[in-house]
Amino acid sequence: MQITPAIQAEAKTILELCQGDLMAALKVAESQLNIVYTRAQVLMSLAGMVVTVTGFSGRLIAGSSSAAQLFIVAGLLVSLSSAAWVFRRVMRVQWVTSLASQDRE
Image 1 (spheres, rainbow, N blue to C red):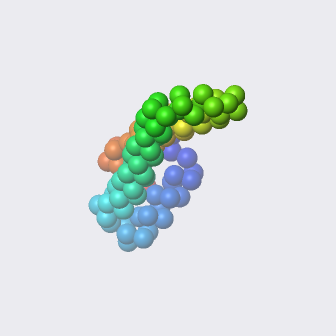
Image 2: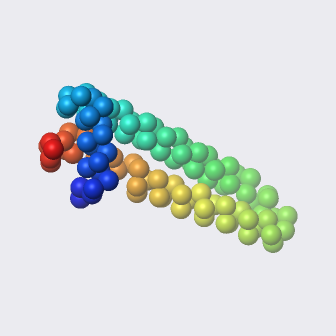
Image 3: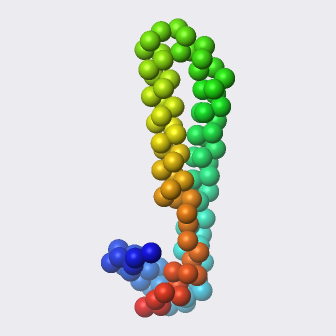
């Protein structure tokens, strides 16, 4: 992972809030990553429910009109693409200690 100026500024801010205590700063970063990871898991679960509901009742809905078919397919594509984005971006959380061992400044 490349350390950008924004990441360095965030790390310095957290370290200042923790009065220079590296372990306290790591705990703050860990709790923030846990929150993001938990929210991502909720979104993945919701995407799974959308796929399941579409699989069971989508056929009946799509049978009513051409517009319904289009909206079912579009909604399913949006749900799957958003789940893929969450998986690619959020679910690959790095260990906080690997970030701390790179640079302590």
